[in-house]
Image (cartoon, rainbow, N blue to C red; front, side, top):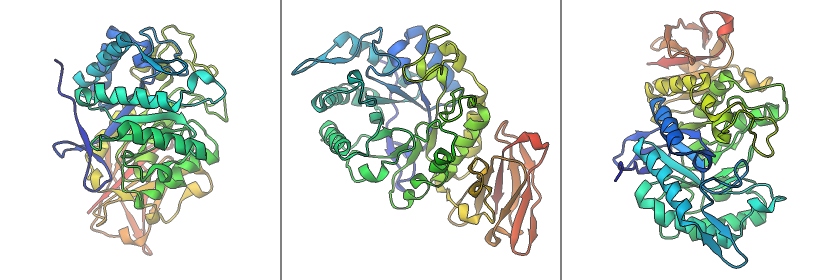
Length: 430
């Protein structure tokens, strides 16, 4: 029979997820894109058990053949013929075994219903009627059994007019009569579709992909783009569904491989850049799911990093776990972005040095993340002796006392420890 799935809804504030019972739910997802397509039962058991122990709450995966796995060993869910769509019942049953295991491990499945990219490769492009037929079948078979959160389309450029028309048509047809489900789109990197789909009845929360770029344009998209401003008018949870992958290469600098430091930075920038609802993690060995050491996904160069098992336990995951332990110790459902409290912002000159601030509306709690050691300077409204300040180490969760310097209407705090300790989280409480 299996476990009872967790049904998610949107909190009354519109800012975060909650369970059907009203308990706040933090989206801590892993991009196990190819796990369902390439894995088998023993591998799934090991992977999901590990992720649950690490504090993950959601598994994002691709349900249809795509880049990295054109021919799933269990078979594709469907194939297009000239005038019809053919479904493979055995493949559906195997996929449903995977979905049940996610539920059994007390996590929420988040399938990408149709991955959509590379218009020059016809294999990856399906007709509109095919997408609707496949989506409706998924909904009918999976909705009640597994209570997924649906990602309708994956990694596409949804901004051209013909794409907007196509995906609105698909979304309306697939989710018609199912107003109680949660769904979103997973756009391509450094693209904003929140305003395009915000009024669609099925579009429940806003997803972005800050992606794998290290240039100023990519960094500023996450730091200062619409993700950090449109939350004020779009009352939906905001989630970065694909930040820097651990071990991935930068698109602009092939000598740069993202490490735990980049994971921490992208995590805190995302959590404090919009009202925190959660974050997604990704790593090369897991999303590609290589069965041998030197397997690579099409179009991603030499992004492989060993067999999939090498991505089970990493420094980046350890630090992600710390991030959510720290977040759960804060009134996170009330936090709103508050960069205006910063008296100085090093990110205006060097975006990789940017600080991010958030605060409760009454300013009883203020949180500031700095990716570099040094001084944080805040404006006068928090230059108040009634605050108790602490430093939180985002690498191990340890808390240290912090002495605030109040002078000339400013509040100043200097990071502790060795300069090589890098990033810190400043927490002020009334």
